[in-house]
Image: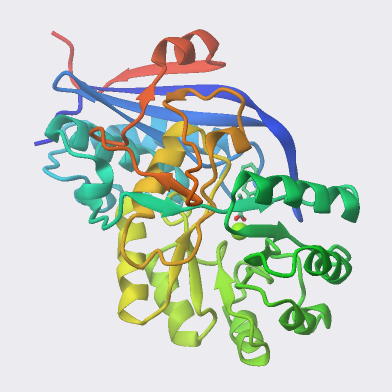
Length: 373
Ligand code: NPQ
Ligand code: MG
């Protein structure tokens, strides 16, 4: 049995190196909810990918805190789990709130793997010890500023660039970028910003893009299926794929030919692995998305991306792309091959600076899961 003795929740704020702008807003500071589960002399960590406001998805840091403290904790008390894969069934009475559940599940995986002495990526079924990196570049003030940012990241060795697009920041941008960088691996992410029928979408085919990510509303699988028949650029879903079931529906409908997997969005590592397996059976490649994670969440993403069907470059950058100093060590650095190595240490493979987290926490709740004698 996995011993679950105490759950700690920390909220910390980390300033971003650069503001990050998407079609739905701008973020300058990452407010992060961290989960620590202790038991049997070990501790495991999870990071919740929810942000301050319900813009990317319905969840926020505050809803995740509420759901973990008031609904997940009671389920953990007296729970008898022999493997982290049993957590989704335990959490199934709670409808929705995938990011809250995923953060707790991650801490269980880390605790389990640390106590077993195995790296998380091996326990998940990983087949490689480094993952292909990629960088996601937010919307900039103007095109020359964007060109300079791309130049900087290409010079650092990033093998793939993803640009955020929205109506009005798309075709002229792509023309300028392709003129300057004709050969780079390039893809775009609209974060739901287009309406079906927008003529700009048909023009994406001119730019040799690896894929176009989530052009339409998160609920609009049929719209994506229609677009996928109209353009030759592969359509990839992000926000729409919130569960294994939804991934299956999307594939049945032909709504995408690529899936962006984020463990937080789909409710945890177990669901993420299942979506990976389903896509693999169907010959659909996947890649790992990012949510501006600190070292804890970044480590989870690296572990997941070592699975065999993560064949496209991932939104997994080096730590210094987002943060000057992180809360987990050592930082992730880009290799000369354009990859991020998977840590060989047990669990998520990074050491969390708990002293610093306790000093800097804007909020700390320490909740016993067993009766203290
Ligand atoms: C995406 N991420 O693929 C997300 C969206 C995103 C790296 O492009 C704060 C917290 C700000 C989470 C901005 C990347 C965010 C965020 C964008 C997630 O769609
Ligand atoms: Mg996305």
